[in-house]
Each structure stands twice: as C-alpha cells, then as structure tokens.
Amino acid sequence: MAQRRHHYEQAFEAYLRRRRIPYVAVDEAKKALLPGREQRVAGGGDEPLPALKSFDFVIYGQGGNLLAEVKGRRASGSRLECWVTRDDVESLSRWERLFGPEFQAAFVFVYWCEQQPPDALFQEVFEHQGRWYALRSVPVRDYARSMKPRSLRWGTLDLPREAYERISAPFAPSASRLGIGDAAPMLEALA
Image 1 (tube, rainbow, N blue to C red):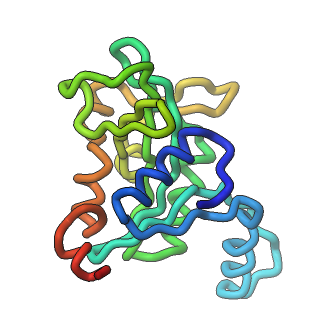
Image 2 (cartoon, rainbow, N blue to C red):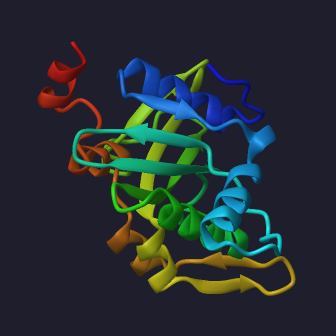
C-alpha cells in the first residue's frame, strides 16, 4: 500500500485491495511533473504550463479505466457533503483529456460514519480499522455540468442536493460499468 495521509484514502485503498480491484496509487511527490513536460513536448511550446493537482488512484478495468480523486467527508445529518475545489474539477478534467478516451475522471466520496449506517442510507458500506465508511462516486464531467459556487473566497464548489442524488452512484456499480470490480469477467481475466 502507498503511504496515505488521511484515513479516508487508507480505507478506500484497503477496499480496493480487499475486492481485488487492480489499481495504482498515484505518487503525490510527482504530481505536477509529467503533464507539463508532455504537453510542452507535444505542443512544441516553451512556456511552462500551470501545475496540475494530483488525483489519488488509477483504477483499471476491461471496459475502461478510472482516474479517482478521493474526497473524505464525515457523514452527519441528512445532507451528504459533496463539495470540491475549482482546482479539483479543472485538474481532473485536464488529466482525463491527457490520459485519453479509455479513462474517466471521477470523484469518489468516502463518507466516515460514526456507526454502521442503515442499509437504506447507503448501498455500499464497509468497515476498515474499526471505522465504518460508505462510498458514492460522481464522474467529473457530470459534476462540472451541475456544480454551483459554494465559497468564492475558498474556490469551492458544491452540488445541489437533488443533483447529487441524481448523478452520484455507489462506487462498485460505477466501476462495474467500466468492467472494474467484482464483475465475474474481470475476476476471470485476472486469474
């Protein structure tokens, strides 16, 4: 496992390993080196490009691949927080273009729950090191179409509740659409 600072990322990585989902954890120390260099070479320009914020995981599947940015949030009350920064949206959108059509960028919201949540609240719940987590994912393209400013000062964006409920999905079904996860054909291909 990669060295992860936050328990949300550690829990998500453990979840991927437990489910035998092929992935690569992104080395945050090298987060802005490749995109600028590759674009300058490809475009022939000499001007340095702005640095790109890193994402957390490349998750591989037969039907496509996911560039996943983990967003850890604490589940409290009836509203699930789903805010991100403008830099998150812009950087992930650029990463998706750089990686090409076989890759989809997505936010994976990892909610930390004080206790095991009821089945009706989340479709995907797991335990890691004594803590309960639930997962929801949102493709960055869908997020960008529905986002609203949350704080101009902090550069944060958010989704209205109805939009989040409409465009978010459990991580595993989203991954299954890409051929990732517990889908039998993918596991057979790994064997």
